[in-house]
Amino acid sequence: MKKRLIIARGLPGSGKSTAVAEFRNKTAERLGVSHLWSSRVCSTDSYWLRPDGHYDFNMRRIGEAHAWNKERAERYMAEEILTSSDTVIIDNTNITWKEIKPYVLLAKKYGYEVEVLEPDTSWRYDPIACVGKTAHGVPLETIKNMHSKWEPTSSIKGKIEEVLSA
Image (tube, rainbow, N blue to C red; front, side, top):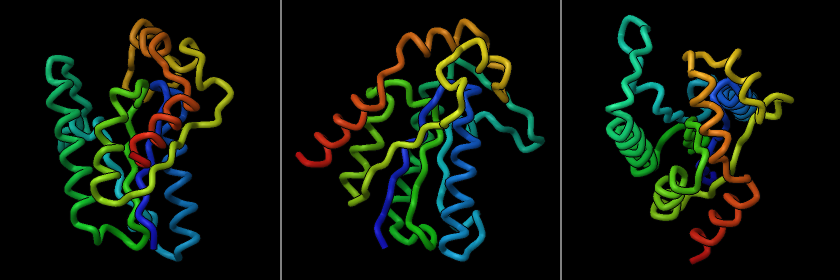
């Protein structure tokens, strides 16, 4: 079975995590397994979740949180026996190539194919609509800032291909 790295990307509130859940459910159905075994999800948001379920974001620790998530992804890829589908999903905003590139380099190192997954919601690029739907209360100004830095998926896919074919 092929090993796949799925790069989920989208503004907070755009439907990204819902798209990931739908992808996992479809994969599980196709494989005849539980969605928990259809893939491994690595989300920096998990770093902020406390045992009581409280989301405790701290901007001063964002670099540490992203390093933690990258280490988890590499650990899953290095194990090689992940799940029945050998799929790792990076469920982050992944706005720029700079955020995505470390995961693509890991994919190359461990022999993974890379796919990009974006929500297909009508509001996915609308910061005002997204702010009303974000699960973690991300402020409008933050979402607008992310939107202004958004790199088109076509550009991201081209850069992925360059890295994987080099």
